[in-house]
Image (cartoon, rainbow, N blue to C red; front, side, top):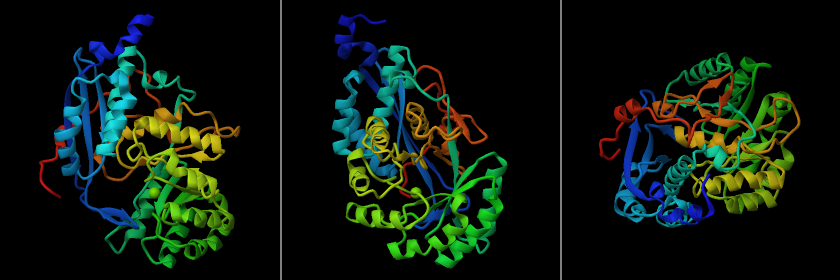
Length: 389
Ligand code: MG
């Protein structure tokens, strides 16, 4: 327990003064590129940082963007700015960093949050107020398209693997093929899943209202098996009323917002009544505190919040911890808390921070800080060589 005087002087506390920042840019190229309506992913990447204080307290952070841009940004501006600063002032530090490089704010906010939690002898959840849930549901998230004639068969095989692993919710892609091909593909998945799992459909902003409404004939047949329709339209302020129109004419929930940066950017969609489920991503938001603010905002507006965490093993751990603090959104047994996205595609970077998942639930680590240290073998194996890609 720290006395009042110590707390007031936390700014000069050696345990919180930033002395060193290590960077770990990581790149992985899948053998078979996979994708969605935006094309095939030839690579997966993340930029890890480790901030160490004068007294040796450390914290890990993660962000995503094109690695050469992030690397220059950290080396030339973010790191020189942070050295000698106190992690006690984490909101001010994150505000300054986000002005120069918005994506870097996520990494810095995670790392200094962990430092303060370790200094206080608490887990990050305890620092934030203490968790309400010991485990959080996760859903299997897939990239359905590959550049092969048998893409549908391979997609079905991945869905089957997820069902066998105990997932009760699977997200697959639409919007990248002619609608008849996509509907034939989803029909097979619906039939395969049966009563075992619900299916979420992600269109990655492919359609207009009329095309999205063409799915309603299918939804009326599949209704109970569709968890949500994700981002059928572009998620831009100008289209908030289009989302509202669509939401009123479809029989399934509409989800979206993975690229928005703050609760403020969700407001036009909330005011228009355009979304049933908010999908903030900790890596796209202005730091983890901004991410938590969006989670709270969803509760204030009475809509669900199911975070997007496709990139980043550490980001999804932070999403798990933040969701574990949220009050239940329903009183239905087994549906107290919304699920978090779980990338099940070939991507070793998601294994950097090992969180155990069993039957579609992830256990929240209990240790000091984030309760987990990264797998250094993965960091060494996928170190980016500095080349353009
Ligand atoms: Mg999406």
